[in-house]
Image 1: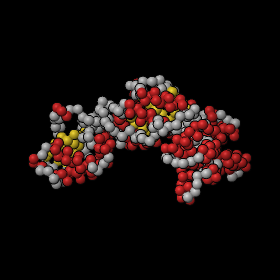
Image 2: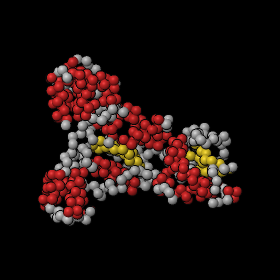
Image 3: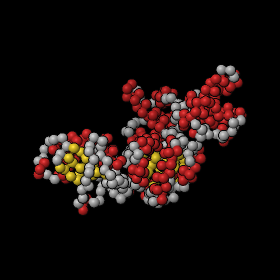
Image 4: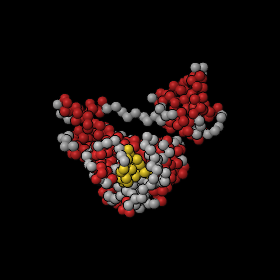
Length: 464
């Protein structure tokens, strides 16, 4: 414990930081504690300056108990914790159980420049959320991914300055989209350590945006994302039928692209197939390079297996490798799964890794289920009733179109986990009340209309 009357607020805060640093990771400490500037300590009150309201609210929610515990340890008494928000607002807004700061102390000249993770001009070693195992070295090249890999290496050398901006990577699940996007980020970071690079899933971006709206922190959310040098968003198709998120991302995209910052997007389909995505975004997705990663050919499958076997110090014969490559054809994830299962069975049962064991493992491996989503159901319904997608999503009330539309809504509600609003938006930008009405109507008609009941049964058989 230090003597309060003999220490400055900076000494006191440094003592607190030495305690805090031992209880959190280095990246958390650099991102959320280094930017804090201690301003004043008097009469059992400490005033800490933070960059933004978003920063203040995050610190209070996640680390207030840790800060207060450190303060109490250092001062030996209960200390009132107050904040001053520097950026965007002149009015100080401390936590609800802490009285507001009524004065505004003058900062020393050397503290006028605040260290903030929300400012592009400050070099902060924040967590890029990149998977460090997904490197170019571990990404085996083949015909199916050569274009993407080559473009990625070019981007890493000169991010934002090539014709590959944005880079839009699409392909089926398990073909390596996440791996290559992380590899580009890691290589860029290696070549340009000062760059602010962030990898984020579309789902997490959506959660962050929703939380920012709920807490009235949209400006801080935008400030943070617009400060990046490279933004990598995985599974961008999850933005479909989410107009609020799309509008915010549109603004972020425009800002980053205008400043020459790199944008990388991955998706399970090409831009033209993103129903429920605003046209202005689809246009921007096509500004740079749109590249597909297809399923690996036989040569790539063999090379991937050899690489993973060597990298994990395994001993597997070429005839086993060839058998796996010949029979596991859809994606890289399945190849990895078979190898892991082979190793597990061999170790647990003390069984030699052979073609017979591989055959048993492959037969035990469940086949990938069809991806059941609203678009897939709409395609089946359109094919069954011989109507176009445009007609299905149109405002037409003709029976030849209306009933297939109602069937599509009924099946989407029954066989997917999407919300009523998402179903309504995807099938013609309608309301959730329309979906409820359609579901009730089809359920009623099935009981009396044998032809409709037969249609539903045929469609459900294909869905399952």
